Length: 125
Image 1 (tube, rainbow, N blue to C red):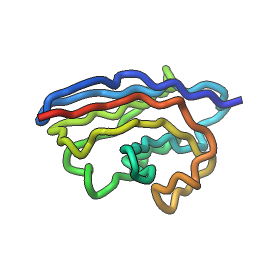
Image 2: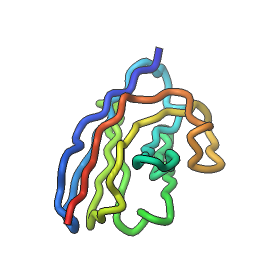
Image 3: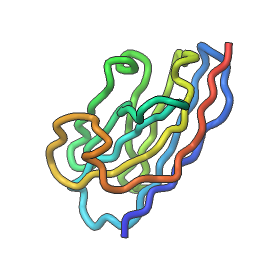
């Protein structure tokens, strides 16, 4: 059973930085992607970034690619989302998710099978 546990959310001023963490358990190999999604009130869940455990390939949404980075510590089975230059529109519940397999065609929630409980990020001016 795969389990994902997020941490690191909270309030932050616009222009500031925040790092989210997601610890994964239950995988017996590195043939999977771990991603971050976010959902603002009244909006659909959108993909932010993802990283493949095997060779560290990454995917980013256009809205964050110049401000966010994603990385992972294989020894800890933990993925990090470093968010810089935060904007009000980055506010939302951030979810960690995992998808098995080598390829990932897009950052769509439907491609990810396992989900964490979420951590709230609130950016204020």
